[in-house]
Length: 181
Image (cartoon, rainbow, N blue to C red):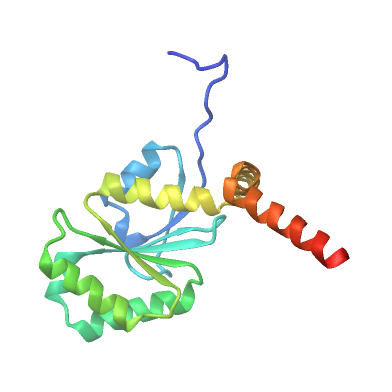
């Protein structure tokens, strides 16, 4: 086993609440293999995956399943999901996102425009887990504070090194000296 800089990277793990309908799904197995604490619940919407510490929820839906159900049923299911979860994502799963899948995503997006739903295409369970854990980790308190801090540092560095910023400061200083006379 190799170590970088004498330290071993710790793996981020959290508690995940999943719909009981996903108990035998490959996503559940991958999350367990990554040492996340997976809890199942019958009281959440079928297909739901909730990262409670991060405050994000995902509704995992297979695109082929959408084509087999009526649009009204699908939209009602999504609407119920976003009413319950403040920070919600629809993970639309398909091995290949062809024209039919893109039209489906477009219809859903148009219907829920302005709501708290973000639609993300996923291709396989591994891709879905990577997407969900990345979003959940980046919105989790210690990590979101770190990201916020790094963004502030990056902004300060850009401003400090920007020739445009220096020119604007010079112009403002010259303008101030003109106003003083």
